[in-house]
Length: 187
Image (cartoon, rainbow, N blue to C red; front, side, top):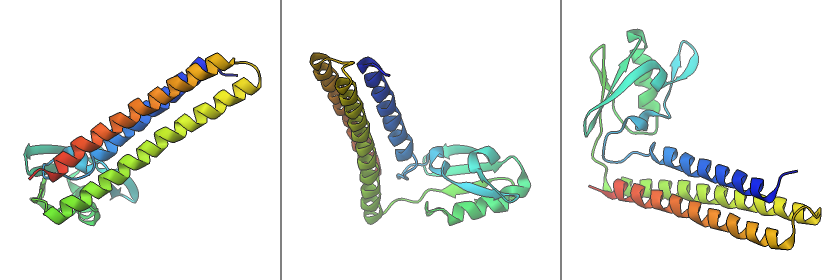
């Protein structure tokens, strides 16, 4: 059976992963600037197999409002172009046979507000995940107390520590949210 310290460490590790996941999800939300991570979620039908775009091409950011996608296999350019057009990014690809150019249009005020809502929902999902980790840790702690493996003082200390971790990681998610909102609203 786990000790109180192992429970705290496990909860901490899971919370860190939740914050990292929030960070990576936020990076896939489009802002006014070009970023290679915008294309992270795009999968291309490559010879009948859904394949991440990153595995089929080199993605570059030659300027602040332009992405370029250079396929390793030039015959896949049409499939890549189709996958980008069908994505929810709202980008219009143009290709010269070797390279796909993706101009990043200026976001409208309305679209910016929609994206802020999307980002806030993502942040809330991750805060909920952190709180679920806390709940599980507290439940396991109670089980240890019920079995007599942990005393009341240790339980109280461990609960305080888990709550500190929860507050710390929720605050990190809130910070990420604040930065992403500012980035999205920046004209």
